[in-house]
Length: 315
Image (cartoon, rainbow, N blue to C red; front, side, top):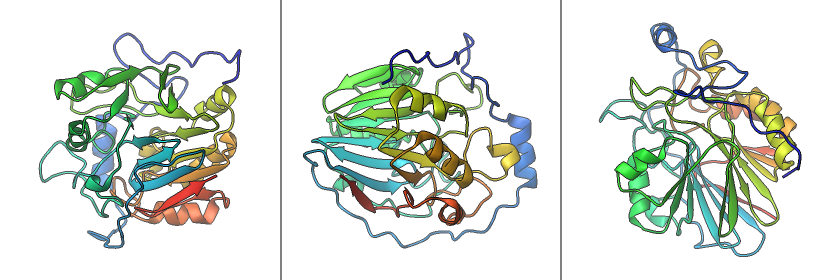
């Protein structure tokens, strides 16, 4: 991390969190307007094109093995350390049984085929990123430490999930195998009608001994990408979201589209980027595979799309 870099900007007003120097998420009236005028592109009910893979128990040495499982769930393995981001194996991303966005592709790794998970990174409390059914199953193994942004630990502890560590933007947690830095994202939080922005949202920098990985989670495009590069240097790997971006008048304050993600990749100077947040749940008006198709049209060769279950090894 570069010395002398100023702290991340204020993002809490004493009651609620906010996106500093950036647009805020649209409110209920705009959400209602979107739903009443929405013209989503058609997508298949389910795509049976996933051949589940089985990761190794661990990866020793400096090689980094990256497996896209689904949506924003990625398994990172290096130097005997296994890290899982925003895990979801449920059939729906919703608090209401039988309603809400349903899975349209299978996970690329069966949950029972996961190796030991040392660290689980949870970026915010939305149901497609904090899936309690999955997190409970991971916690029942008794092997994982859970890292969350400020305000989210109470939810996990109320379900007897732990150990859990809560971080604010700029905080760092040294752990065996990696140091975890909490970094800004432009988004919002809510799990119900009355808790909007009561908890924080974030991305993470994962600092291994000889490389850094940036997990951007859910975020709009903004100045935080340059701030992250100034603070940590260029990442060896960036996991950047590309889906749930239409219509832009509603989604641009909280989600990047493929062209935004390419700009972020260029600003970060990432050696390699991998697209996340696409291809499993249709959360917005673009079709299931439009984000991947558009990214392939505009991205450089070192910005990759992986299928669920596909892995790559970075030397």
